[in-house]
Structures are given as structure tokens and as C-alpha cells.
Length: 107
Image 1: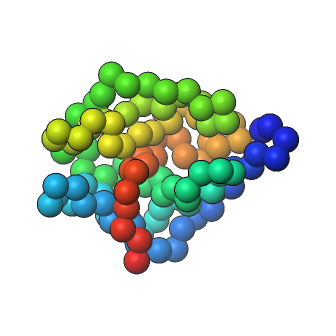
Image 2: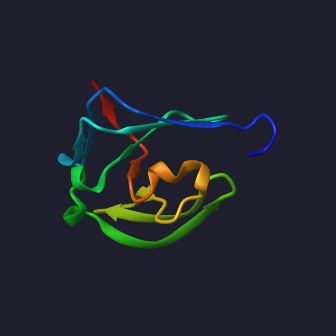
Image 3: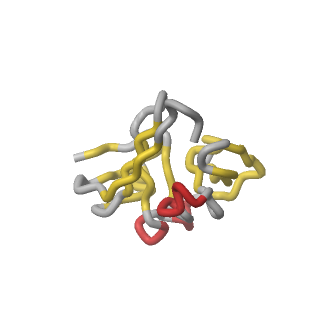
């Protein structure tokens, strides 16, 4: 990590739900909560709790110097709606293969 930059990951206790274009794409009672300096709180969901059959792999890949290389998926006309780190950096290994959406409902 860079001086002053931190990432923490903890097991969440709240229910997370993702609805897009009227379809439930994910529901989880076991999200990983990732807090990163300068970024909004993100919820990483286990793949078993995500409707992968409704997502289409994207050609988009990005690099984060703190987490590694991300792969993306799209839904309908919304490109790159969800991402995951298939081979994250060791400091954030817990998020491996978990999926993260830009917008979620938390209850």
C-alpha cells in the first residue's frame, strides 16, 4: 500500500441485494465489505449469490495498483455493471472471485 492508503475487508452482517432493469441480479447475506481510502464502501458478493446466467462477460479489464486486475460483466444495455478480481493482490486475497456492483441495496 501507498503511505496513507488503506484497504480493509470484513465479513458483512447486512443483506445486500442488486436489482437492475427490474431483475434481481444478486442477493447475499454474506457480503465482504471493502473499505478503501478515497472510495465508497463496496460489497463483494460470493459468486453463488449472483445470477451469473444474467450477466455477459465484457472485454473490459482494468488495473488497480492495490487490488490487481479486474474483469467485468454487463447486463442488458448496461456495460461493465459488475467486476471481480480473479487473481487479487495478496493483501486483498479475500475478494478473489467475489463480484462487486456499482449500486446495491443494503438492509
